[in-house]
Image 1 (cartoon, rainbow, N blue to C red):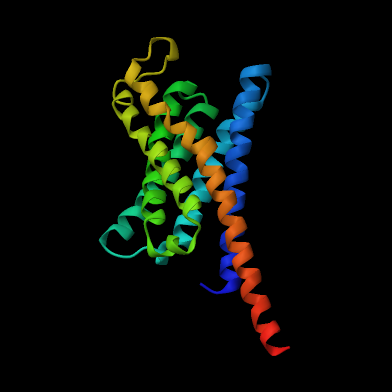
Image 2 (image 1 turned 180 degrees about the vertical axis):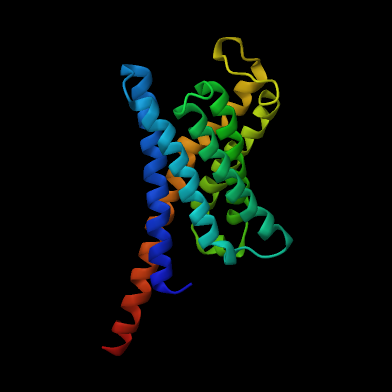
Length: 206
């Protein structure tokens, strides 16, 4: 990847991280004061998914082997599901709880891609702690698959939801905390690496 490509990847990553963090803030604000923040959170969730799909597609050549296409496919499918979840609740087709089940599975797909990416050769150029944060985010997000049975069951009431659904909802900690931290850190690493690569030829020529 050339230096312009690294910078563009960094910008896309930080945008993803900022939107994810903003979505978490909107959700917390909604529970505190209500208002339009719930809808903003729903729209931002779809934004996280679409930005993640763009990032996965941009980095698709960094993965190799049979798992590469599956990982990118999981991210793209997951992004589509996050958008569907947001559409369901914003349109009033379902309640927020059922829409959250759909989005959770979507983010689980993105988490699977993130696990593959952090295990790739590309990730060896990143600091070990950055890889660890990415893996933690991916593992947490993948927990979202635990809510899958709730979709055919039509679960849409938080008060009566079975305990196993809440296990799946732990995945949101990955989406709202670990994933944005990883994405913003990727921006810093990629930008610094690009800056160093640009400066070195100039120093040699001086």
